[in-house]
Length: 246
Length: 116
Image (cartoon, rainbow over the protein chains, first blue to last red):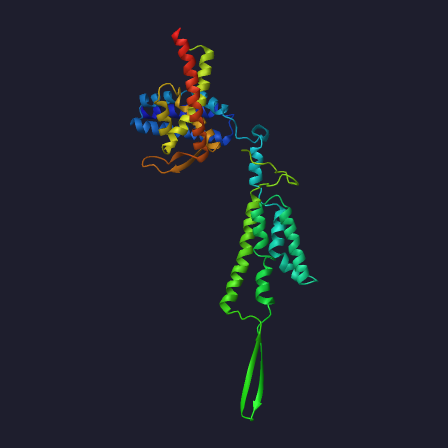
């Protein structure tokens, strides 16, 4: 028997393995045959020979292909049947579900509600009202821990309204000069200023911190909500109120 | 020839224990399939046919007790390396505790049988 015929033995063995594992899901069947093929190659490389004796020895140690396929069949299939495994896949499914519409609305209201409200009929009052709706949704949701709710409420109150408020709604610095003429030649002027004076760099800093803070918190809240945790068991209208086991 | 019942009982026992031997081997460091299988089959009486270890490896990977990485080899095609995951470490620790007590209990009864 020459090397070519010895290779035929391998091909035949793999063909029998493939046929015997016909009932496995296609990906597991292909994986199994690939792994066994790689094993045969590695074993022959280690033996340093591809003659009939070496090949037969390797195949013998591997065992009957039908026994391998049977062993693969005994392994439980990767569960599409959820009942078999209990609450674990429920948690997994929830973990991948991402934030829900209500979570997104809540975070958007907390972040932007103030700014949007500002342009509604009552100006500042509607700004506070719309932001407060976001707050109520935030605090009544089971999806966030108290720490996260505090973050959402305090950085910054009003969301993106806060930096706007600081920059544009603070009373501007106003200076009025009053002068009095004396002797028709020299003029004494007195300057009276009201309102804070903000240097340009400070205005930029406030804008950056003021905008970055609530935006970062909003992303954080969405990410936490996306994990599908449900922190209070009561009032959880959502289906994933399953406390983690253990 | 072993009696049928004992044989099937033994093969059940092997099957149950083998996966923890895989985890214990991987606790030392990653290995590729062939290395892993040879190390196991060189232990006396643990493995009856090397091929049956591969379905087990596949299940350990699906259960995320091991993870795999493809690496180039100096000779031949890339190899699939198996590593222990933190879950796998946990399972191994738990089994090691249980096994010690289990083995002691079984030994205790088997030694009774030998004295007769």
